[in-house]
Image (cartoon, rainbow, N blue to C red; front, side, top):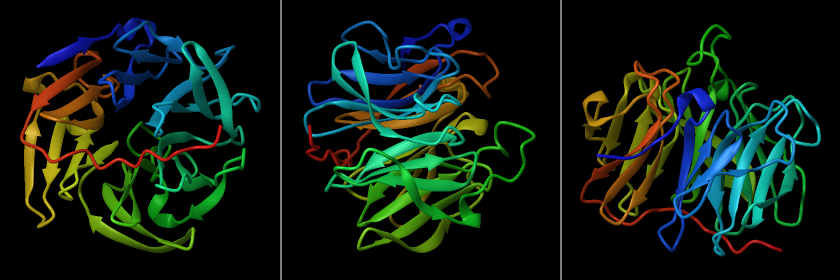
Length: 284
């Protein structure tokens, strides 16, 4: 079921999604430079858009939103936090070279950010205001600059079962990265042949992946059973991210690699466990 459609010609391409405690659905609109909220109007994240695009999205225990902004402007690139309606401030700066994408939190407030262009994972500890390099590894790298798939390395990030999980769209892999006293541990390739964008876990350990170039949502159980849950026939057009809700999934369709340029949010009714999503209590 298509829950919401967007205007592709206006750059309204929903790249990532978060659902707040009160049920408000929030999505980054990539080229429009805004975040859409189901209970209000889209909000510009940065005061001057310039070349800014808005990618990853996360929230904390107080339902404040955090959006990753990719920009070649030094004062814009980084993670921005919504302090109040229509009021965003930069929470963590990033170098202008950073190709930011998915972001996620640990329970104790460390934020991780994927750099899809440079094949790196960045992080920012509580009390810091700058993203620093956490891990650079060949398993995170893109494979070629030639197209949107091969030029996108590490993409989605989530914390699950004490580790950082990541997708590499170009390499078609799902990775588990150990966390050892805050430092990067062993990198394990868990799944292959899946050029996924972002993804979500539920508390059973079931993994739901938005497989952008294949217009599919894929479920992988803890036992490794794979099931395609939705396709283009269900309204997907380049699915890019997933949120687990009480009675199923919400999936953003970016439209970038799809066949119809039809960006939307699709609701998939499904029997799921609760969302596994750390919402830390962050400093003011």
